[in-house]
Amino acid sequence: MTRLTGCLRLLAIGALFGLSVPLSRLAAEIESHPVGLALWVNMLVGAMCLLIAVCRRSLPIMHARLLRFVCLWGMLGVVGGDVLLFWVVPHLPASTVSIILVCEGFIVYACLLLRGKVRTSRRSLIGLVMGMLGILMLIGNGDTIATAGEPVWILLALSIPAVFAAEDFLICSSMTEDSDFLALTGYSAILGSMMLLPVAWFLNDFIALSWVPSQLEIAIVCIALSSALGTFLMVQLMVNLGALYGSQTGYTITFAGVVWSIVLLGERLSLGTLLALVLLILGLLCVEPVKKVMNDVGGRASWHGFSTRWMGGKAALGTGNNVSDTAGKRVQTDLYQHVNRIQ
Image 1 (spheres, one colour):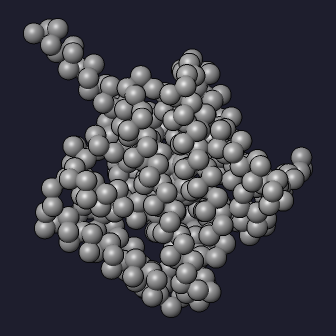
Image 2 (image 1 turned 30 degrees about the vertical axis):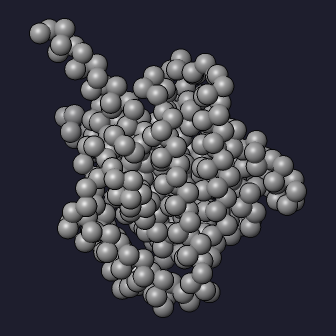
Image 3 (image 1 turned 45 degrees about the vertical axis):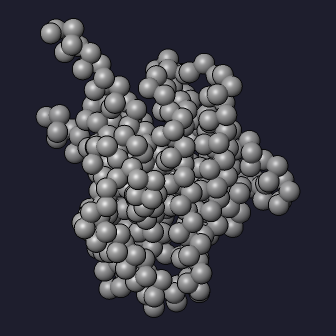
């Protein structure tokens, strides 16, 4: 029953986070103000996450080190990743952006490889080559370029998973075992939104929402709601089944993003896009990290849990937008100490 519940949560997390990219495209097509959209979405995400944390009585006490951490987190995830997502997504099919976000896993693995955190193996090198071929197929895909206008938008879209990968390393290096990830997600979203306020004022990129719900308001609320609920479910999944099991969300998020793009936007996958998706997924399976790598990198999308930043849309989210394996490690540590006491 525990494994069955985990599978259902895995599918639910993929469906929630995968919804962010097509909804981001819908919102960006209505209002082409990436800073204003990121501002509204993250204000709502922060409010929802902090509300859940208050109900769970898990709000951490703010101090200088924690404030510096969540400020950097908000700068990367909100000011960087989410704004990039809302800027790029109107120029590319949502399914293509969902596929590109898979590259976050390759970027994290490549960085770990360069830092000597993992061993070079034939399987991992084959996986990296397959990932590169998948990206080249996306860039050279005629249908994608015709929709995007220029392949430069795909190259710009690749900066989104790069920002999310940097966010992963920040979370990994700064998250402590007594931290509540949901509450810190809320803090980072609120502080990131505050950083966006002067940018939105300078660029005149504010968006005035109406009290009467229209397609824009519904899209923004649904992005925030899916991100907050997805983060909550991800935390629960990590606590119950560990980070290694939670890493499988990367695949469900990608496939859900593609399916939602077909259902909501009527997109069709060309043969080139479909082959690129298959190559990227197979390549990511080849470089899927062992437990040591999972402990070196916090979690989110491809092998890490969130993302994010809701996964950006973070996609990224989202966009998206990011879950650390801290909770799972804490459960394992408690169990280890309990066994020692028995002995």
